[in-house]
Image (cartoon, rainbow, N blue to C red; front, side, top):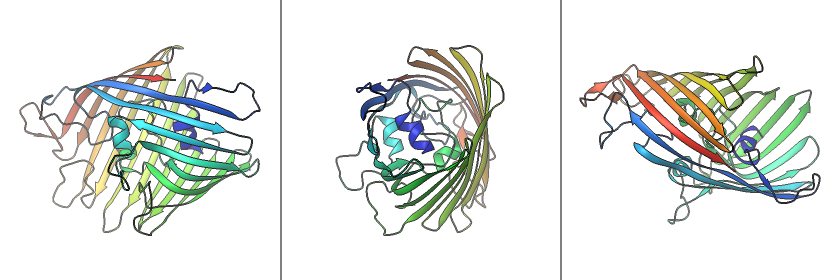
Length: 339
């Protein structure tokens, strides 16, 4: 349950209302985040443009989201109700509302049953098991997100089974609605997901409506203060529409309160997939995105200054003269509070 744990149950600062270790417990947790964003090589007015990835793309002082997660953990059964309010939450649940015109604030909503010590069944809406990054800003080191995260799936609704195979091995199998169709199934088609894990390294597969994605996510503690994460993925949407990419995440803790991390990502698309923006005649384009982030912790508050450089094969961006440009440099200062 890698993604669910990262984005819901294991958020820092969980408030446990029942203190008995082995007794059923209700908990309330979440995050609140806001940020300032400015282009360094492009306008910051109505012509402002941002990298073609999700979140942290609004100019000036901007809002992230208020994420409130209620969960109940019993001896055998439990639930998670994960609600998101604000621009980041809206982007995270972009395929909603499907059923109601009043909008949707549900990021995750699922129940689970621990059938045995090694088997758990989960039914409902849960964040994706693919990829290194997640929706929660507290669970990502970088505040802005990668292309791989932004154009992979965000959430699924369905039934999944998690198996603890022992000796650090795990297996997950799922049957789900089409990707990001979170409220109900509008087409009658179903997707299938598999995840094989070993000691924190995960090989993922997703097949949905004739498209499939293969993804590897992992990382290693190379020392007490240095961590190296890795994400690599390939997506085939049919009709020669595809993307592939790889991202490295070296992170160095310089003290108990400050860490420095780099995301170095290469992302390529074919068949006018459209992630990067302007594409050339045959629809192929690629981008190298370097994101340097500092993370300073004060109590439950994380302050994250961030410099980002996106360099594309096509003129996907603008410069200060409003001419097409192959590169964009930008700055973000984010504040994320966890409770």
